[in-house]
Length: 251
Ligand code: URA
Image 1: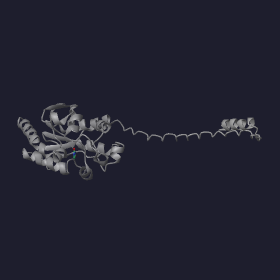
Image 2: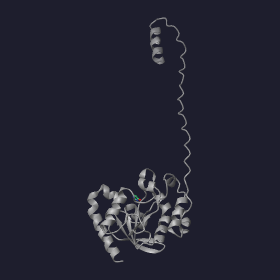
Image 3: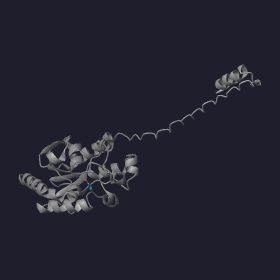
Image 4: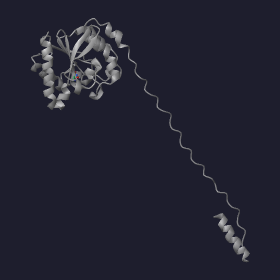
């Protein structure tokens, strides 16, 4: 701009026009780029919770009552903080059959017993259909527990770390109950207890659960909560119950 004005004035001057001096060019003030505000320092991470080692605690339990007391006193961090109570078992601990499910839900958390909500009612119906009493007393043909002892927040699935924390207690639970046969209700229980994943293709196939007292035959079935959402799968669940009945009849 400055340059073109200068050459225009030169041209007038050469043409004889009296041209006034141009004021000295004003230096253009450079506007310093505004420095972006430094990002705030990252918020300190909440200190990760480290639970006490559950293995010696579980191993020290000599009875199911002691196991329950140990769970009641165990600090499982956010998992136990978010639950009303530890949920261990219902039914007859001397039964040949032990059912192992996933984790307590809202009803179980409130009552302190596993499988007392809608999926528990279906479980009882399923077991009743093959002649097994499972209403919740000492006369039952079944003992019922889970692989996770506290209700996870918002009824979500227990995460792998939570399941690992519970594992020594689950193993001790089985060792103390000494069932002859285990029914694994759902993919989570199957995965935790056998390492096998994929309930759709492994249900109804005998697996083995290894605890300190030896190997126990275990049959994975669809979780009753899944059957409530997928009633068309009840026909397959019925086949699995017949497989279970056959095995129990063998003694
Ligand atoms: N689902 C489970 O797996 N366990 C319960 O105790 C209740 C619902």
